[in-house]
Length: 306
Image 1 (spheres, rainbow, N blue to C red):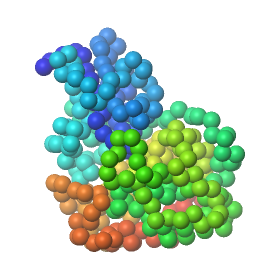
Image 2 (cartoon, rainbow, N blue to C red; image 1 turned 180 degrees about the vertical axis):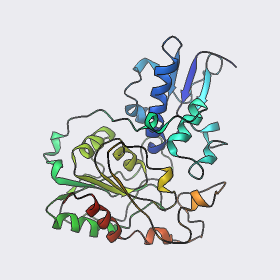
Image 3 (cartoon, one colour; image 1 turned 90 degrees about the horizontal axis):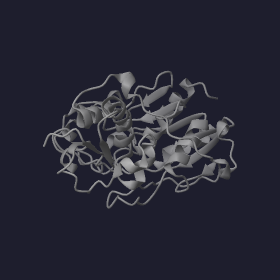
Image 4 (cartoon, one colour; image 1 turned 60 degrees about the horizontal axis):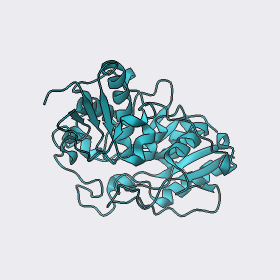
């Protein structure tokens, strides 16, 4: 059906996908909807990523609006589909969003991640300007820093007079049914453990104030990409060229393994994938075991934060 009324259906539970979609959605609203109607379908947990959308424009992801609105899906068919198969293997995450929602590829500067609203984080009683944020939990098994290696990074940060702050979420948010966030990291007794103690916006505000952020490609690192804080990000299954957004002058250091199957989902052009399983059927993927603390420490030193 052809209609000048549009629903942008952000039918994803992936934080990175949604944050990457925000600049495309803002472009669409500003460019096409000064006189035409639109709605945004997104799960309640993630409305905070779209502060520019008025509350009366949100609708439920599963609402029936086919008879009145033209629908643009972020994830085709809701479970993947033609466009979804292009990422992470064949296009940048921001391009995936612009094609899915607009049918075109916007320029890099138009797709720069949007800053999230700042909120009060004084309840923590911490001077985050003297902290390095370490993302300590992960949803996907093949995008993980082993707990033993993360502890070594924390030790180094602490030895340099800065406070490591451990963030992330274990268990589920309301729309996750399986593949829950997890970690093998154990709090070492120094630094500040804020796992399971931040909202999305609190996490963004903490990251905004910090010296640097360290983590693997996943939801929290995409929140980090909305800030101007230096980021050290590890990439195993997906090429950093397809994940790191345009950040202007903000610095990003990529940490990668050096093995023949680097970036399997980008370079092997797999038609299907499972972020919880290694295509080589290794219990602990070689790319994960190669993500050693010294690689992240070397990247931190390049940022000259100490």
